[in-house]
Amino acid sequence: MRIAYLDTFAGIAGDMVLGAFVSAGIDLKKLRAEIAKLDLGKVDLETGKVVRSGITAIKVDVVVSGEVESVNDLGGDIHRHSHGDDSHHHHGKGHEHDESTHSHGHGRSYLEIRSLIESAPLSENVKGKSKEIFGRIAEAEAKIHDTTVEKIHFHEVGAVDSIVDIVGTAVCLEIAGVEGVYTSPVRLGSNGYVEAQHGVLPVPAPATLEILKGYPAVFNDVPHELTTPTGAAIVAALSRGVLKETPVEVERIGYGAGTKDLGRLPNLLRVVIGDIKSPTEEDHVLLVETNMDDINPQLIPHLIERVLAEGATDAYVTPVMMKKGRPGFVFTVLMAEPLLERISKEIFAQSTTLGLRIQTIRRSKLHRELSTARTSYGDVRVKETSVDGKKRVTVEFDECKRIAEERGIPLRDILERINAELNRD
Image (cartoon, rainbow, N blue to C red; front, side):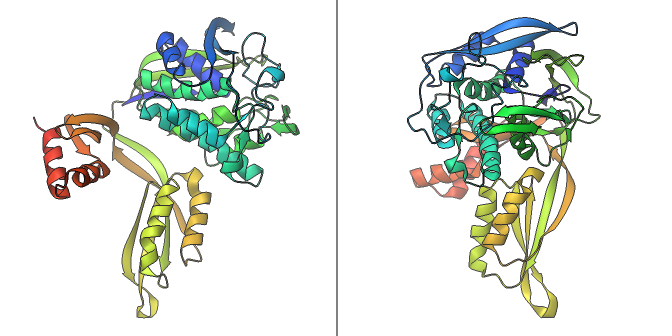
C-alpha cells in the first residue's frame, strides 16, 4: 500500500502540507491546473526555497487577485490561524496581515464552501476528502460556539488561500497515488497565545484541540501555535493513525516550511511517501454495544441508517434472549474514536437504551482501494483487494441496485454478471 507519512515534529498547517508535497516532487503544474477548477477568481501558487536548520524546504503562498466574494455574510466564528504572528500560514506577498483584502466581511459559510467544492469539476476522491476536512472544522466550531454546522461561517478558513490549502492537499494525495495517510503524534505547542477574531486564545487553540479529540497529541514546550485548525483537520479527516514500527519502503521525502521562526526548532513539516508491503492493514476502532428489550423493532433500521450517516464504520443487530426470558437485541456499532460523542448522542436519541459498553479493538484487514471500472453496463464504483497476489474486484451493491432499477433486470443477475466481468482472468 502506498502511504504518505506526515512527520509533525514542528506541527502542521495547510500551507506546510502543500510545500512538503511540492518538495517531494508533486507536479506543480498539475496541482495548479486542479486548483484552477475551483470558482475562486484569479488564484496562483507561488513557491520558493527556504533553509531551516540546514534543511532546504519549500514555502508555498497563495496569491489572490480578483477574489470571488461570498454572497451572504453571516458573521465570523473562527480564530485567526491564517494571519496571526504565531501562525505558519500567510496569504502571499503583500497579504500577510492585510485583512481588508481578504475574508473579514467577505467570508463563506460552511454550506457555501461545500457547494463550491461539489460544483467544481474535480474527482470524487478529491471532493470527498476536501469536504471531510472542512466538515471536521465546522463540527469543532459548532461545538465551541454552541451552534450548528449549518450556521457556521468562516472568515480565515473560508478565505481563498485556505480553501486552496485543503483542496490542494487532497489533490496532492491523488497525484502521488497515496492510498493511506499516517502521522506522528501531532505537536501542538503550549503556554502561548494566538490572536483571534474574538480576542486572544490560548495555544493550542480550542478548535485545534476539539478537532484532534481522540488523536495522539503532544503539548511540547514551544509557546507558539504549531498546529492550526486546518492542519488538525487534515490529520483528523485523512489519517489512519500513528505509524508504529511498520516497515516502509521510502520513495520520496519532502519538507514544507511554515512562516514563523521558532528559534532552535525548524518550522518544517516532513512528508515521506513510500510503500507498506504487508498484505494486511491494522488499525484500532471503538466497538460500542447496548442491549435493548423494549425497542420497537420498526425503529431498528432507522437507527442503523442514522449511525452510518454519522460516519460509523459498521452497525448491526443480533437477536438475543435477555433476563426474565425477554427477547431482545444487541445493537453493535464500529466507529473511529473521534466520532464517539456524536454517534453516542444519536444512539441515545433514536433508541430506548440507557447506557453503552465501549471497548477499543484492533482490526486486521485486507487493503482495499476504491476505484471506477468499465463494464458492459457502464462505469461502476468498485473495491479492489489482493489475496496472495491475486487481485479481487467487487462491485458496490448500490451500483448494481441502480443498474437493476434502470434496466428492469433482476438485481441478482446484475450482481453475478458484473462481478463475473470484473474478475474474468
